[in-house]
Length: 131
Image (spheres, rainbow, N blue to C red):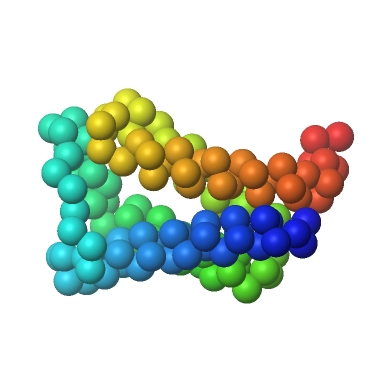
């Protein structure tokens, strides 16, 4: 679990989560993030507008992404962070698969793949959950 490969994967995934989570939080308060927002297809745009209209979903997801990213980079509670990230990464993947196939599918696959690799590397810690 402490190989250089695992450390690199953990750091890269943590950095991705911190950057994109912080961008979500900045967008909420300043209506424009520090990264430009891509144009989305109509269905995807409607979905994101609905999430933004709730007033809390994007804040919670952004805060969770930053929190998980910090946990991964600091190597604190890594299995817990990976469990928290699992539904987020699946939803990112499903969003791009069903609503925005051309847009960010590569990024969604990278996040899901890195999360999957880290879950595999920490599998002995997850094993008791399934028995």
